[in-house]
Amino acid sequence: MESINYRRGGIVFDIQRYSIHDGPGIRTIAFFQGCPLSCGWCCNPESQSMKPVLLFNAEVCVHCGKCLNACKYGALSVKNLSLIDRGTCVTCGECVKVCPAGALVIKGKEMTTGQLVKELKKDAITFRRSGGGVTLSGGEPLAQSDFAVELLKACKEQGWHTAMETTGLASDDVLKKVFPWVDLVLLDIKAFDSNVHKKYTGISNDVILKNSVIISDIAPTVVRIPTVPGVNASAGEYEAICAHVKKMNGVDTIHILPYHTYGENKYSLLGEEYPMKGLACLSKEEIESLKKTVEAEGFKCVIGG
Ligand code: SF4
Ligand code: SF4
Image (cartoon, rainbow, N blue to C red; front, top):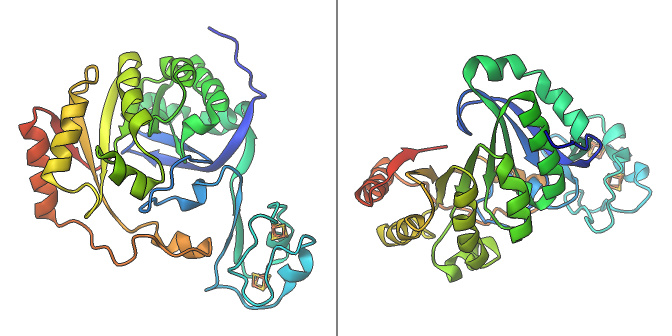
């Protein structure tokens, strides 16, 4: 076994236990902070920044003003606490400590590989009994690739199954370093049309599509399509994605991840407008129709994670 640097650190914004949708068995998900994409439908917008972020819940704030006095940096606005100056805020947490209402929360915490593995060991029996393991998610785990590699190596040393939810955006060197340690890749393809991809995620998909082929050569891969009305929820877009997936190595299953609005309230905690405001979810019939398209292209299709 290669040596593991347990002191290698990174930023984790959540640890979620007892998940059954993100790989085989019962899993614990380590959510990595930071993502190079900014998908309009993202249900974890607090994960997009590469740094921890301060969230403010106006609905529980009692307007005592204690946070304003606690902030030495002038990052909070007297006129409107939702307008946190994120360029100035250093997420020191002083305002969080004095808030009597729990209206301020910092998401994202520095952890070493050793600290994270210690947390994950609490679920080791569940992993063993269920055939589960650890899933790295985000954000985009590849955005903290050195941390991801150390964590993955540590998981393998414990004998745990490893999975990664990723969009695959990274350099070739990162792909070769990370994916040999991953037992199952859950790879998102959000659109085949590069202009559509750029419009809704902030970047073109040229590198992502190229990398998807490389990744499938290294590790078993399932493709997932986050499916959003007006973006990619059409037979034509699905057929184009399926044609691309046929160029990948050994991919026989495509997951449809139907658009939902579970993350909408988080945008207000960040002081932002929800980019997809008012967008209706897909009907059961529309989802079934897309499933038939996938199956007609020769793939197994799963609705949901
Ligand atoms: S986290 Fe620190 S810098 Fe940011 S607003 Fe609160 S007190 Fe100010
Ligand atoms: S300390 Fe908390 S409750 Fe008081 S004004 Fe600030 S956010 Fe609101």
